[in-house]
Image (cartoon, rainbow, N blue to C red; front, side):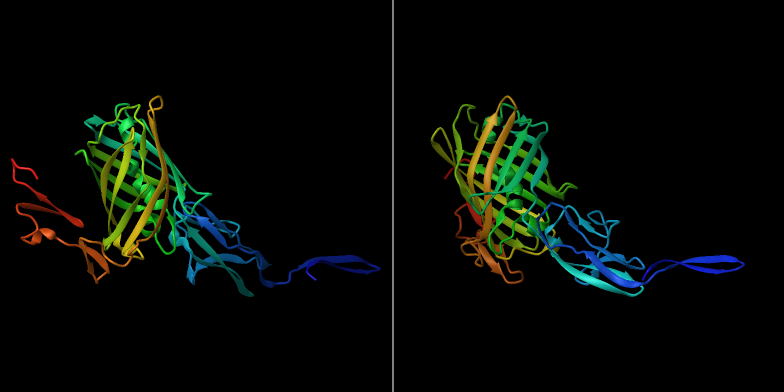
Length: 384
């Protein structure tokens, strides 16, 4: 019955008329309902919600009963839709669209699930290797799901690499460790680095080659940029085994065990092999990771990252090192037992380092403790 009406009165003396509009008020009705979504971290979610009624309803959003407030990632669009970008794992929740006017309100609920990790990474690398200054090298990586296995595929390129260092860097796959840990395919209840830290952490790494060289790396992950890319700053310092540019280099598949050593603290280690012209060379990697303790801890005391299908090459014309690696993360074989060299701390629970050097019988001379291990050292002028 709503509409425009006209009243006309006539007699012998003339005609008079009046016009009016009849408006019928009505409670809100949702005309465009939001649809549940499963999206990758670092992407964009737009939850559509539109309503009609008289008076025109206002639209608001809540999350598990609490109002959703706009910030640098969350925007309430003019048409009533909710936009979240870049997505983080903590955005996973049920959201409520509420339309209100004077005659009432109506609510619809929509689930949003954020999984995985960022689909891209970028950063800078500075420092020196083998006494050669880097200047500034640039890291860019993409992350995709493997079509053939339950892993994620990381393809990365480091550009502006000095030609004297390029061949030797082919074996340094763990310069990408923050990328593949942050984005590794999660198996079961295991958490990758993004789920655990929201991609904000510091990672200190020491690489020791069987030939005696030692390289140290510091990675600082600064979260995601506006486009959802992982941001990294990398500093390297030390020495690596030098390789000829024509050497045929391959890196074997390996695993890394991640151990929760305290609030906001992890230790990771692995022993690996690379071959150069068919000759195998072992080397060890030790990582210490710190992040905001309020983010919580891993669901297991020990998680294992699996790295496979590794390829690496150096292009001297582009001065670029290219890597590809497939990564997944799962609970460790003894996921709720502390490895050798660690003791269970029930306050977490965590795995606390055992200081073997506190025992007088550990070494005859000098003892040097390290996370999960120790080393006996001879006095100056002697060797083991």
